Length: 300
Length: 300
Image 1: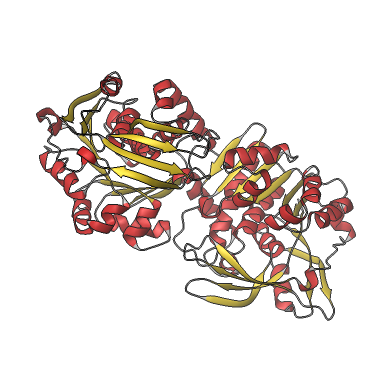
Image 2: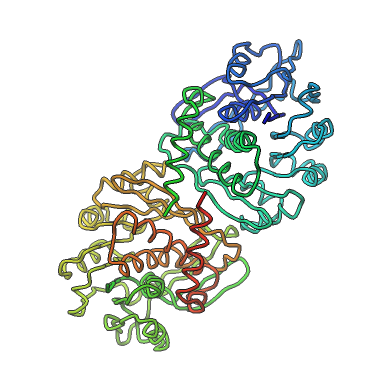
């Protein structure tokens, strides 16, 4: 089934303890789209500036990503993010953010996009996420991401948004901030009480937790020794997860658990190189092979 | 099969953000023994002072722990540790340490203890751990624990010890320090190259990783919202793990993986109250029930 994603598109500059890359393809909607494209057709909505290389659009199109919703602002510049990873490759500092065209982004969905049964609201202002939701015609599954900034400056909008979505994906530190609870199990359950039917709490190198009314479980990250660039790990996790759900057209508890595992596996590939470089090199068969290995790891 | 443990016996004072306990039963060998006692008979070797309450010994004896190797030093005082947990209940500061009788502890094994097929060398000076090993008659499985202190002040002894044991259990921060590698997967594999046939890397609230020549896997911690006191989590993990291996008299890869899961489950009970309070309230049936639930959590 088609999967719609609305979110940021970026040119990232990434510094790790040993290497750096300037102005590489990034952004939540881009990582998400590419990760989901192993499983299903993706419709992408986002905004870029005139500096946006056409090659990036072609790369996405070649992966069955419909870029009809990609808005190019004349005279505008693409959103830019610069970050630096600490030596543990898990914590990072944001060095620079230039919102540029993202600042005034008000997504308008192409008409056929409004009927997408699966929707992912990548990180963005909750009010913008709500605007997208209002344009939709009866989606079957809506999952949103958020970040600490919105918890700080747009908490009311965020709480209103949480009552309208089926699932929320967020980081451990964000869950602690949102609920003012340091215990992640309690924090996850408290987020659940705020509206969503399920909550996925991402813990970076330590994996992800899942919460629903009847289930609480944890999945470890796939153990990889090749962590080159963690940028986009959370978005590629969400892309793998939502892509699998859309492919199966199923969001039963069993499908959600398999989807969590697929998200884990796709994210583990993503961190093995800068930008989308590693994901570009692998096909679905490699995703499935690592999925089988991961399932075996957790079997006893 | 009998399981021998040599390690510290302590009276702990524990401060959490909401509560505190003074002079409660603790120590690596105590947590280990109690956790292992769900599975097998345990032989305990350690030292205490004259201030040691006889009730503590009786508590262990009632759980099938052979305390013949418990040395009581006349006029001596029991090892005391005081620690304070930060609000995340994962990081802690040591406020006070009084080694007391532990300072001159030179373990001498009762004769029948020397023939124990399973041995756990709980945290202690590597030279002391080696002295224990030299008294043993053909143990089938020897696993050791260590800590950052020995990496700093007794690295040569530690490296010599690592060549003599089958398995090593250590914390994530200790593995990073020992190998000077921040990536836990690489760090675990580097520890493996130092001698042991397998390495268990404990990550506190994030679970544990297992490394052997042919296997690398991660097990998440059991998700509990009742973290009252994490003291002894690592030692009760090791006790559950070794207890299960000794009960099965098997340390095949399949048995080791089940043992990792049993360790995870026993540790998850241990953190739900101070000292041994929670473990005292549960029986094997409750351990098995949570084990089954944990296995189900990781099945997809």
